Length: 205
Image (tube, rainbow, N blue to C red; front, side, top):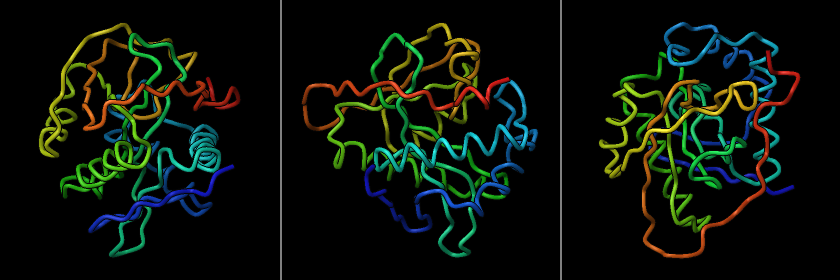
């Protein structure tokens, strides 16, 4: 068990998950626009299992897909953070960056702000040599958001992992994906963390 890190930006607090976040996250999982690029909406049981898994991974490592809280209101608005994909990918092992925000938080630059802070944490605190991201090909806003944050992204296409093995936690879909890589300033050996399934069996369909 590790003491959970928290990250503060001008408008956001990235923190450990709390029980009060779960029902709000469940509402997000039923929003057709929020879940547009995912195979299906989440049931309350699936949503709670995913939130609990995010909580448990942060408790274990100290970092992960943090709950995103808007500082001005104290409202939970989704998650932003880092994750170790369990699926075997062409560039495994790796750490990915991802986010999912409630519609009320869209269009205000909060995803860019939080993702930039998470990348800084990855490079400066975890000393990672790179961070990856992947999403459904054609989801142009995903790449545009990285461009706004000043991150140069290289792209490659690859077959998606089977959704039965690891349903999407952040920006993945069971179709070909894009991958972005951000080089760090320090050149150190790539860490090879153990793969941890982000989606427990009871949450799978």
